[in-house]
Length: 329
Image (cartoon, rainbow, N blue to C red; front, side):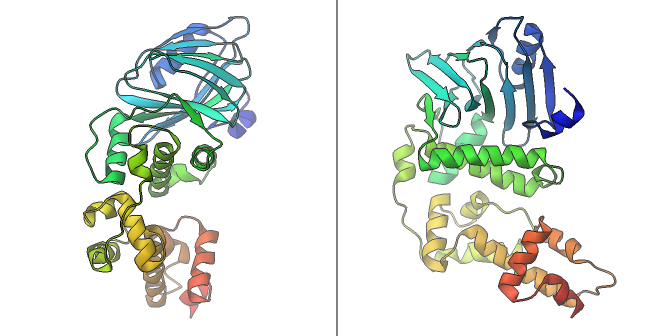
């Protein structure tokens, strides 16, 4: 595949392997995801695997361009999420569950304690997430403010027609596009971490499992006084990569309670409030700075604003002028 085509491909900036060799294809997918058995017509195979990993999980794109069959043992220490974006697959799990996926309509969840067999259509393409148990179960624990020690027993199939399912699929596609874009999330570790946390939240809401009812139950907001430590922490650490999970820990509450409390008491989300705090800090620094020595971009980056045009718009909405005007004035 030529360089120009690769640059525009799904996660083409992160090539793992392009091959027509069955054993090479199996080895590459085993290395990135999970050891498995692979069968496919060798005269048709045209496999592409692109993938990148960060602190929270691995995201990759896979296609075989062939009627492939994969038999995968229990994942043991991770959840694998298959999001079909072209073609279709038919799958069976060792607990007797069966599921079929179609492009943009459905996906699969592979569990740490189940064997899974998946048959791909020749035109099938998937984004595949590999989320370590620790990442997902810790994230769920923070959502509920209670320990999670058991495997999250997801139903086999994932429905992308539900609101949460649509958001899950679109957020993974957005993540892949941004990682593939020069100057995108790959160069923005704070933003990437926040988006990956959002993807895990959407997975927990989109998939059905033993914690679904607890996640869906309304959470009582806390009184404004209990938000005091959280608000103080945001002010004192506004230049750091804060997340809802960290803020919830500061307030000794679940992430859901944090969001409910901010919505009721302040009329906005924690991250929207944090953005206002950071904009106030930016304005203060712009007013104090010498425009011949310091630039707007330098100050904005220091306070966590990575997209210049979006930052300028947010700044003008809050203060009625562009940041460069504040700096010059």
